[in-house]
Image 1 (cartoon, rainbow, N blue to C red):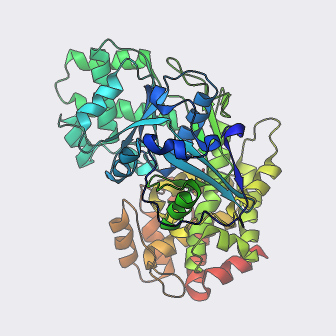
Image 2 (image 1 turned 30 degrees about the horizontal axis):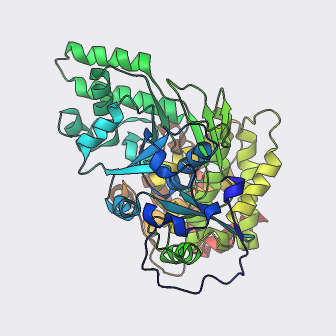
Length: 519
Ligand code: CS2
């Protein structure tokens, strides 16, 4: 964050003496926080200009931090954020008693840097406050809507990135109930905005899938189509032409590793601040935001706060999704099978470090379209260092979540591109085999239960139940069209590699298979 506003703590420095913190972080107690950690300008002076859907730890450690930095540079006080929690009220319950203040702890082996963020000025729970949400989305003072609702939040088919037109929740929203889905909320907000005079709006998707802005634009179109029904009314068409002319969806690549906050993290925040902070987030020092400069109206000075504006995000997002997220997922499935609880522990094992680097070098790198002047080798080495961050406790099972939604962009693109040029992507296909084994057995190699948290978990379990050999298991998984396109599923080379790998994982265990492939 601001260089003048950071303080570096040695990892070995003893924490403040007290461990009980009856006082809670909030505006009234902000004066107790050392001046250099406090947010500037005073949060009371900000007004809301951004609505953010999906107020999880990632937003609080990424976009909100860039916004805070831009605010601290004195570039305008009208960029406060109204954060919206979609699935549970718990973030609202944590932040509202703190006047939406929370601390960000950047941690690495070199120490901890702490800052209090004041950019979030209001929190809504979409479940119970849909009218307030629509009001915020349609307000003339709102210029930007940002989103981090995860892949599954969009209710699209991951292999086609088109709306699931048979999704009951989408159908219910499309037929006019108070919206509960993200698409329903957005379109209700757009409609209200159009009726209120129709100021332009920028919708900035910050989730991890390719062409995220263009994809969201398509999903909004798909949802409008779903809403239209058999007897379309003139107003639907008027709304859609207003949308085409007034709403933009720049593509964006976001990057920062932000594990789920733990009780230990909250304790550390409390020790440093001398105040309880139920909203604290822990992250790494690294952070990146690459955005296409296609804003419909004004925007915060995010460029001065470290974001990069480019005409085409494509090459950056592909690099990030395939190198960082692809390797992350590979380490998550194979690492969890081998008994590693955290990513850093997995890459500390030499065979996993060799495997991760080989996945990037041998399978992914030849598929990339690297931006001119970009130092890919340094990027990959930095990724290895970031994965190995010794104080970031990033659970393999956290990253393993929602595999059906993530695999297509993280690993299957690499695999298709390599197969298309006659190459066998051994490292990437082992990662997919790791996912199949993880999802089909639900256990690590030593028998520990591994949670299968996935919107199509039942389908995955049914595929596993229907099979009694590695070949049958692979065939059953390959027939899941949400994940594998028909073209990829019918590629005999791919099916052969997967069958061999699923069989070897079963016979020898993940650690041995990873070690053998790395040699
Ligand atoms: C991770 C990402 O949970 C996951 O699936 O791969 O959240 C990853 O940490 C971020 O994309 C890093 O920018």
